[in-house]
Length: 91
Image (cartoon, rainbow, N blue to C red; front, side, top):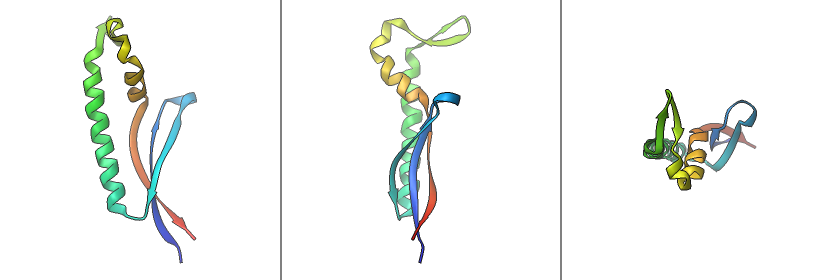
């Protein structure tokens, strides 16, 4: 009998530096759905928060030099696109 599992992961980067990070697996679909929803909601919130450190320079949004201490966290969050889950079957 095959058992359904749900693998939760997020992806980020673009083109040649694309990556995926597996977070955890669960047998409960509602747990997976709740986690993905919460993750994406928090990601959106933090991206909005760190966007206040950007400044518009000739029509391009760039991270302001005066907030360079926050750049590492900002950069890490900007690379994450979204979290999702998919179904896998085990034997």
